[in-house]
Length: 336
Image 1 (tube, rainbow, N blue to C red):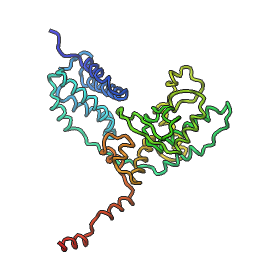
Image 2 (image 1 turned 90 degrees about the vertical axis):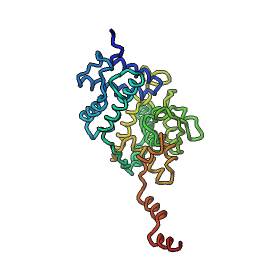
Image 3 (image 1 turned 120 degrees about the horizontal axis):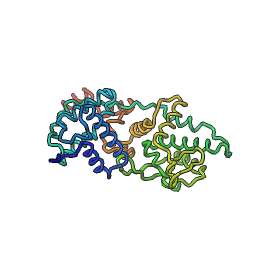
Image 4 (image 1 turned 180 degrees about the vertical axis):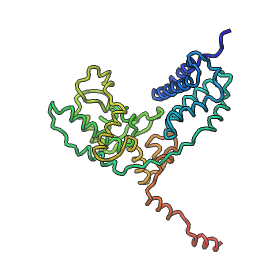
C-alpha cells in the first residue's frame, strides 16, 4: 500500500505555499531556513527527497539546533535562531496537518528548550561621532553642472540625501530603499506613511534640513523614475516600469554608509543611525512608547531592551529626584 505521508521535500513545499500571503522578505527567510534544515537532514542520514515525514522523531529540532551551533558557533546565536524559526514552523505545520505520527510537537519543543543557549542582548554602543559622517559628506564640494560631471554630481547629492535621511529619521535601510519620489517631492507637511517591517504602516517625519537636502537631489534629476533613490551610472538599457529596476538596493545603502564612515574616520553601519536616533530621542525626553511608534517597533519591550541606554547625567537626575535618603525615611517613620 502507498505510504499516506508525503516526502519531507514535498511537505516543505506545502509549507512554503501556505506562506504565500506573507511578505517577500519573510518568504525568503523561511526558504533559506528550510533549505538549511534539509541540508541537516541529509547530513543526519535522512533523504528528504525519498523519505517521508513519518521518519522524523521528537529529537529532530534539538539535533538541528546543535548542528547549527556546531556549524556557525556560539558567537553567531542570532544566525542560529534565524534558521531555527522556519524549522519550528515546519514542525508545527506537520503537527497541525497530522503529517508526522512519530513527532510530538510538545516533546520536540521541550527537548529543544533544554539545549537552547540563552542569547544575551548587548546594548549597542552608539558612536557619538555619527553626525560627523553626514557633515563630512555635506562638505564634499559639488562638481560643476556639466555633462561630464552630471553623474558624479547626482551620486554625491544622492549620497548626501541618504545619509541625512538616515540620521534624521532612524529609518531602516530597507525602508529607505522603498521610498518613492512622491513621498517627498510634493509633500508640504514634512511627513509620509511608509510600510515598515512586517508590513506595518507608520508615519515618518522629516525635518527641514533633511527635506532640503533630498529636494536638491530630486531637482537635479532629469528622469521621471518612481523610486526616490536610484543608481546613476550610464544610460540604463532596461530601467523597468517607472525606473523600478534602477531603484537602489539595501546593500547599496549599506555600502554608501561604509564609504563615508571610513572617509570620516568613524566606525558605523546603517543600523547605527537607527540606534543613534532612538538614544537621542530618549535622552532628550521622549518616552519609550513615542520612540516605539517613531521607529516602528512591534512592542515597547523591544525599544527598552535594545535602545534604552540613557546618559549617566540623566540617570543621575532620576536617581536624585526619586530616591529617598535614609534621614528622610527615618524622619517620615518618626512622624507617623
